[in-house]
Structure formats: C-alpha cells, structure tokens
Length: 110
Length: 110
Image 1 (cartoon, rainbow over the protein chains, first blue to last red):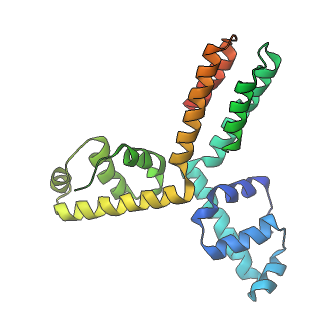
Image 2: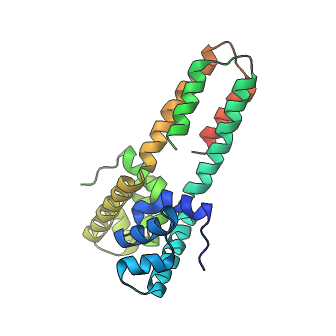
Image 3: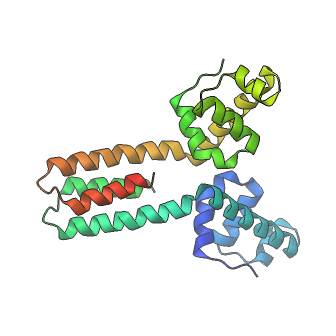
C-alpha cells in the first residue's frame, strides 16, 4: 500500500509542474482529493495495479527531483528561520509594523 | 551568437542539477569559465556548430524549467524583500543583533 504522507503532499506541491497531465491527475485525486486506488482505477477505466504503478513511479520521480533541487528542504529551512524572526520581533521592544508586514510578505512568497 | 547574460548564469545555477553531464560541461565552460564556442569545440573535438546547438538547446531547457518552477523569479522576490527588511531594521530604533543575524541566515540559504 502507498502511504499518504505530508512529505509527499509537499513534494507534489513543489514539483507538480514537471509531471505529465496523467501523473498530475492520479496524484491529485490520490493525495489531494483522497480517492482510493480502486476509485481512481474505476474513474479512468484501468486496473488498480496500473494506477498503483503510475503513482509509485511518480513518487520516485518527485523524490529524485527533491534530491536534485532540494525545494522542500530549503522551504522548511526558511520557514524555521521566519518563525524565529517573528518570535524575536514580537518579544523585542520594537513591534515595528513595517518589519512584521515584510516578514508576512516573505511568508506569502512560499 | 549566444548572449552571455546574467539571467542565464542564474538559471544555470538554479537548474544545473537537472542537466546531463555533457550539458553541464559545455554550459560551465561557456558561462562560468568564459570559453568561446570555438575553444569548447577544440577541447571536445567536435564542431563549433555542435557546441552551439547543444548550448542553445540547453538554454531553452533552462528557460522551460524556469517557466515551470520560477526559482529565479522567486529568488529575486525574496532578495528584494530581504533588502527592505535589512534597511528597515537598520534605520529603526531596534538594531537588534539577533534579528540581523536571522536575516543573514535567510540570505545564506539562497
């Protein structure tokens, strides 16, 4: 059975533009809409095994992209520092609105 | 003639891990070490036209990756806000060392 992990959701989010339309459809139904393999198979009139193989292969591709580009890892690193930045700013004496809104803009870019 | 632009240098930097070893060699010699097409052709014992075609094709691939993943564009957006953040912090009353060093950490992640 494939495991629906948060990690795979993120990897799909970062690299979906590099996938084929079919890969995107299966992944989106499975991970975002929480369809079962059987339901996707029925929807596309293919075998459950075919859906499983396609998703499994796509997951491997996503992991390979992450190995090369590290988008998820860098996203996590930035998020961690942004959290520290906000906390430091809020407990410091300068609750400067401009600074907070700039940090918000950085977060929204993610 | 191919134009050696700053943009292409950045795109190569962001997406080189997705290229083949040969593409990386040609691009690296041409863009980072400033070899001419003729010098690369001599080095690899191929025609100047072959080198030109390979680099041209690689540049198109890099632009396609950027269209899909926007790594360079997002990098520029983050850099712009980080600069504003630093300026605001330096002119504000709180020249907090912790805040500045956190922003430095964010910059180093780029």
